[in-house]
Length: 127
Image (cartoon, rainbow, N blue to C red; front, side, top):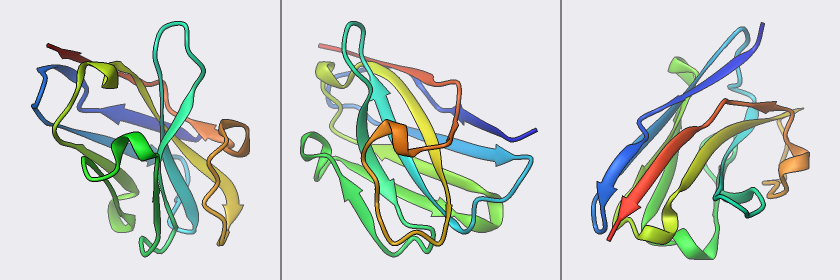
């Protein structure tokens, strides 16, 4: 059974930092692009960051550029999201996702393009 398990969420004050991790089990995703998404109450799920299977290319949503960093360790089958300078508007459930297509050159930003999802981890930023 393929599973993506997120961890590292929590509550933090504005300006603080959190590091999210997403570890896969059941199969390796070393040849798959991975993404982080978030969903706030009453809002649609939106892309935060995407990383190519090589780790060499990334995409960031405008609202996190310069504050968040996505990275991966294929040996550990894990993808990370370092979140700095957090704002109250970053409050959401954060999900990691894997693109089921191997060796894709496209950094997809739509949730429907991803085939595997974690259960999500809550991030709450207070002012």
